[in-house]
Image (cartoon, one colour):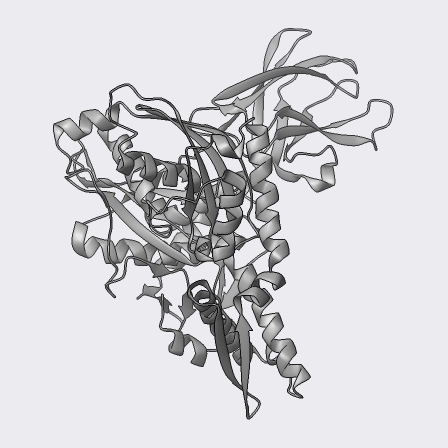
Length: 536
């Protein structure tokens, strides 16, 4: 499911829109890419010469923010200056950091990372004002809107939101020659297993010569490589305590150094069976021997969670593991050998090494950006006519990642309420459902319905994404009056709502108030705040 931002001025000259870039806004690392003149998705180096930019912000003086700072600089900084894994807070209206007299929301902090990516890439590409930004497939409506708003605050017109597994599948299909080669082609069934630093998705994709179709998806926005690292910090901390030391997690600076050391050890254990972690804590030096088997035992339940989700997606699509043409790994955390072993056991074949797990999402966003460009008039994305025609022939289709419902109440017991699902998850989009409801009271001035995302009937276990208000009703309506509600997603993933009062057969206008949303006035304030920062 994609999302499209409200338009912003994004022109390099009168009537000439700038090209669209692809951005992977990750929990641990981010990247920006384009499709070059040869049709190759190319990730643009940052000013440090790296294709990956750490999604870490160091808040300095009142007007300075450093993105992707050196680890030693981070270690010497105060905890309140460090911003890590802010992607996990996108869409959370209760989260904010104080910096001086400023209140920094997840959208604003994410915009600083996007600004860094844009500024570095502009040194090579010229002005950048439009982008496709990726999100985990399992991001709900609130998180998607927050991502779009982060782009707007950074001065970027987010022309589309694309799901990370879809982007990775695009990279696989495009670079393997399956997609865009217009001879006869049997459908390929691709499982995209995406385990990043902070989020997890697994998606089944069917690919033909001209189309990429998502069949089923599931995931967890609070599961990623950082959770494996956290488990390792617990193992090491317990050894230090057993040796008579203090818990290094109790001191913010020591805890940071422990986490960094465990992150390094985790990566080393992906290459070697044994490593030694050395740490100075409270005036004492400690040496902790770690083995891969010990690490895998400590994190076995985390890996099992991803396996359960993978098996559920295959079951939803009615596909056996042995029927998969390929398993594609996305995200730096897939480097852990246990991931590969589990997927090989599940699918009967080793996962593909065709893609770079840390770059494929940005590359797919660039391909999607080029597809959008190819359909615009007056945009020269640097591709020739033959490549442009090839891009124009490609189509993609998605499914919704969360069930969409409304809160309903019992006419005889207004305290009894539940989530009435109108559009189940994994429904192909665009989609539209029309159902009838009835009013609970006589002569209502308006009808109020809560919009929910969730898979269960318990309202409190769902996410309230907004308020649905039917107003301008005719006077004198009796309780039990039927109201027809039309509810759905358009092709771009926007939620659409319409309603009709059926007694008088009159149209009723609908007002939607998005929960946790940021209105234009607040966006303007956040944009001004972000502009005050000198981003390095």
